[in-house]
Length: 116
Image 1 (spheres, rainbow, N blue to C red):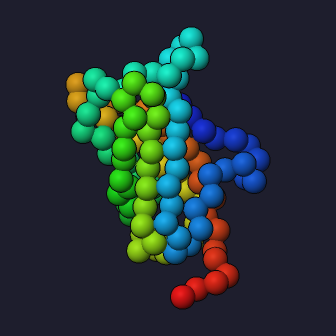
Image 2 (image 1 turned 180 degrees about the vertical axis):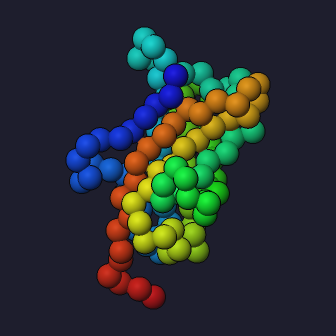
């Protein structure tokens, strides 16, 4: 089970604004549509890349909501300002008790207008 968020319409992709704090939450559900209990999983990692094959990756913070089935990722402005000025992909995985990817999502990178 991998929650894949890849709408065809680019306007529905997850938006990352250059230079902003970025936080995104995902609701992981089991086959019955109920929240998937993530409490047995640990050693969470997440990365953003402009493509699956891109050598440059940005590590993201991950917070697991345990029994709620919610995974939240975050990146600070120091990272979003350099995220390649490109659309991309993010995925979230746990490494314990086994390596498993729970979320893959398409992102749209938007340049900002106001800069400090």
